[in-house]
Structures are given as C-alpha cells and as structure tokens.
Image 1 (cartoon, rainbow, N blue to C red):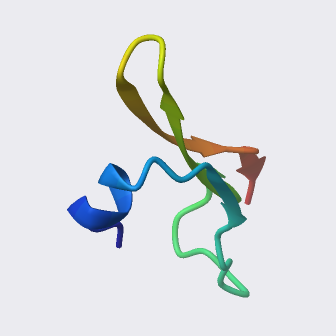
Image 2 (image 1 turned 180 degrees about the vertical axis):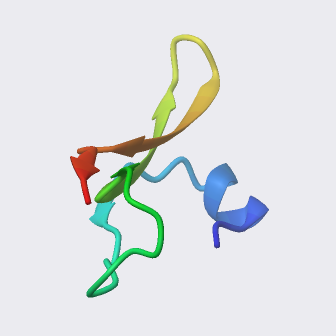
Length: 54
C-alpha cells in the first residue's frame, strides 16, 4: 500500500513484488512496482513493470 504522505514526499522508488510459488490463473504478472515524481510536470507516476509469464 502507498499512502498519500508517501506520495507527497516525492520519493523515487522501484521495488520487487513478492511472487507466490504458483499462480491459480496463468497469465502475465508484474514483478516490480515503482513510484516516481516528475518535477517539471508536477506529476507522480505509479507503475507496474518487468512483466513475466507465469
């Protein structure tokens, strides 16, 4: 979970997402998440990345 206070801190973070040992439904799942702040646009970007087939 990401709090409003964390978003307003303008921290840049990229962390792995814990993965289960097995998935009930096969598909493409993210393995990382990120939060970044763009001061030029005054925007916060929240992203899921490094997609992997499971």
